[in-house]
Image (cartoon, rainbow, N blue to C red; front, side, top):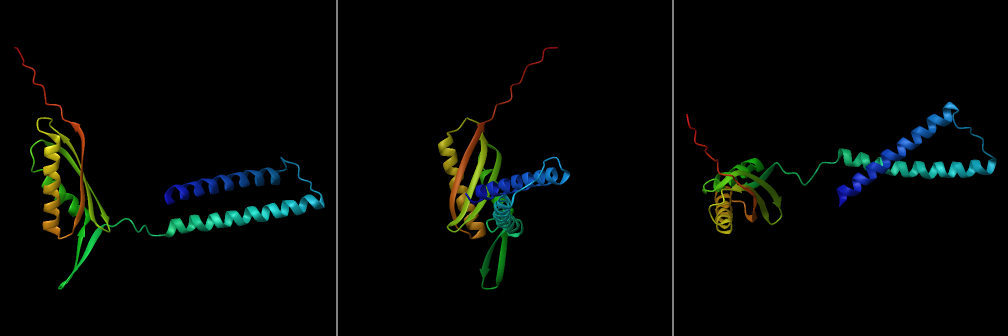
Length: 179
């Protein structure tokens, strides 16, 4: 939700700056005649002050977005032991997931995605199956194997293992050649 709001604010900011730039160019070049009475001048001054204030707030927000560090992206998981610190990269955990899942026949084109949550690791395995074995049985075995393997090797609790079956592979058709 915050990203959508930030994108909307950035869009409004860009649109506002573009419109103000076009108006300034037209007014300064004389393409639009500009003559105001004293009363109109006060209203225009107040409108410019309000617009400048809103643009200043939008500028501060866009500036903050550009310099803040993204807290949700973790490239490693830190653990403390009695001997010191251990850092395990997310790529390492993804490769452990792929290693555990690739042990099963019928699973192809494996991809893994790991998210670090408060409750533990959230692992998603994407695969293509051969279509010759039961998908629920196969995915259940893969989930258990990945869960157990990652917890055993890394010592990090796994909260969820999801398996997404993207497709069924097509068996290669061999055409007989007659010479």
